[in-house]
Image 1 (cartoon, one colour):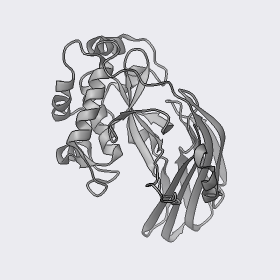
Image 2 (cartoon, one colour):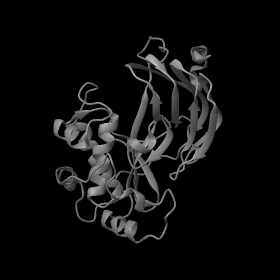
Image 3 (spheres, rainbow, N blue to C red):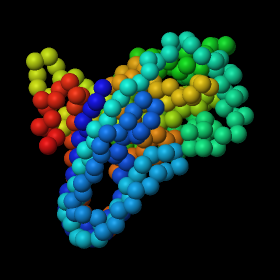
Length: 299
């Protein structure tokens, strides 16, 4: 499947901002069933400096500095990406989770995709006894790592309520877990904490998910959203699982970044020099090739 992606973010400030330094992670990733056919980012006001780099985990980031006073800052990313993934494995296939746990800590690989980096607590994913105990029933002796992770995903989807008002981007993992409610970020963090608590490497993945308008309804501009899910290392490589939707990652998911938690992959972060309140508006469109008539929406 080929997708056209549009991600527009607009900040409006109550008072002029004199300086801003931002890191943008908006370009879809190449590899693992994805290939980027085109990608461009437009900023207003234009940056005084812009440098593209890759972080330790392989995500391409654009670092920009804006030195002119401004009350509005907008970022629009347009991309075309082809997604052709292999089918996911059967739920109970693969090496036992105990073998995967032992192999993860014994590997000498220290590259950005090495499993050892995704075993330990991170800023937004502490290892909590309550979360580990919640995950433990999925990890019966000898069960495959993928089967245990798949079962944990299904349990989270059944036990947790999707509620955009229950949490925000700064809500601690313990609070989201205790409330059994939140958004995709919370679902992913809870699942990662459970997997790591059992010794299975797990990464946070950000990107987009194709959504389908209701029958007979047109696609609404900007109505899609960023998404997050989990990549679990099962000894033979990384496999994507989406606890928000209780499904394996396939061609409807478009990967942008991978890290230890949301803090590693935020689409836009940085600092601004100014005072006063700010308003944020985000518009996202994920348009498949089969709906080419809707491309006018992102022109």
